[in-house]
Amino acid sequence: MMRIFPLLFLFVFGTLSQSLFQLYQLNIPCNDGTPAGYYFRPGYGEGSTKWVIRLQGGGWCWDHDSCLARLKYSPWWTTSKMLPSFLRENESISGVPHEGILSSNPKLNPTHYNANQVYLWYCSSDSHIGNQSKPSEIDWHFRGKYIVTSMINELFDVQKPSLSTAKNILVTGDSAGGVAALNNLNYIYKLITAKRDN
Image 1 (cartoon, rainbow, N blue to C red):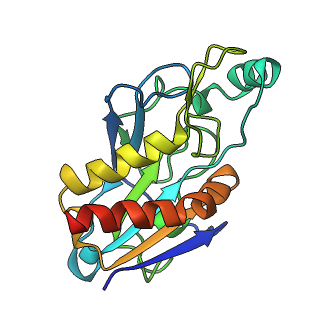
Image 2 (tube, one colour):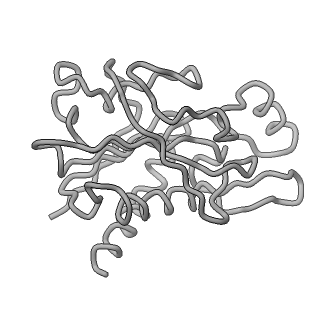
C-alpha cells in the first residue's frame, strides 16, 4: 500500500548532493523556453522505497511588469540556463539553501536521509500549476503543471529505482512550492496510481 503525504515549510539543516535531469520534451519549458529540470538522488537501504519530492518555491509573476521585475531581480526562477549539473552539499543557486528534509545527514534528518530525493527546480513562476504557453500579454511560458507531470513520468520510466517501487511518498515545498504541494498532491497521487495500474 502506497502512502502519500504533504509537508510544508519544513527546514532542518543538512546536506544535499543530487544530479540534474532536464526535461527536454516539447511544451515542457521554463518561462524563457529552456528545458525544465529536477535534481535526483537515489535512495538506499531501508530508504529505497521512501520518496521525498520537494517542489521549490520562489514567488510568482502575473503580468508583463511583474515578470520583467522577476527576470531582473531573480532570473534563476525563470530559466534553467544557470543550473549546475550537480548540486553539492549546502550549495545554493537562488540564495535558498538545499537542506531540510532533503538532508543526507542521519543526525539531522533521521527519517528520510536515505530516501529517494527529488528537488523540482522552480522556473515556471506559476506555483507549479500553470498550463499556458506564451500568453498574449507576455512572451513567457507558464507550464508548471506539465513540468510536474513530466517529472513524475520520468521518475517512473527513467530513474532507478523507479517511483513505481514507492511505499511512502512525501510531497513538500516552501513558499510557492508549499502552495504547489497542496495544489498538486491529489494530482500527483492520481498520476502515480494511473501509472501503477497500467
